[in-house]
Image (cartoon, rainbow, N blue to C red; front, top):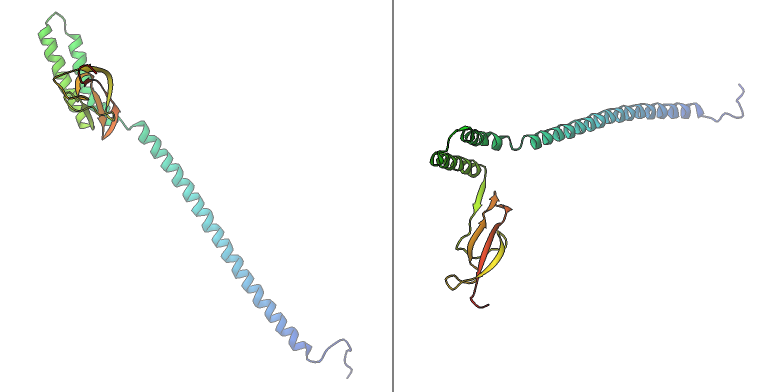
Length: 176
C-alpha cells in the first residue's frame, strides 16, 4: 500500500474533529442569529409602543388644553343667563335692576370661589409688594406708614398664585 506523500498520518481524525467543531459553531451561530432576530423584533415592537404612547399623550394633552375651562364656563352660564334676563327687562325700575345685579354678583362670586379664585382686598392691611401694586402714597396721621388706605381695584389669587395685584394707595407719615 502506498501512502500519499501529502497526507499526514492520522489526519482523517483531525478533519472529523474540525468538521464537528465547524458544525457546532454553525449551529451556535444560527441560534445567535435567531436570538438577534427575536431581539430586533422586540425592540421594534417596543419602539412602536413608545411612539404610540407619545402620540396618545400628545392627543390627551391637547384635549386637556382645549377643555380645561369647561367646568368654569359651565358654572358661568347661569351668571350669563341672569345678566341677559336683566337686560331684557323693560322699564325704569332701578331698584329691581340693582337687586338683580346684586344677585348676579353673588352668583358670580360663588362661581369664582368654587374655582379657586380668591379676592385680594387689602384695605387696612400692611402693604405687600408681592400682592399689591402701589398707585399713590397718601400722607395719613390715622394709619401706620405703609398701610393700605384705599383700594382702587381688587386683586385676585388663583390657587395661591397671584393672578392680578390689587391697585392700592399706601399711607406715609405726614410731612414726608
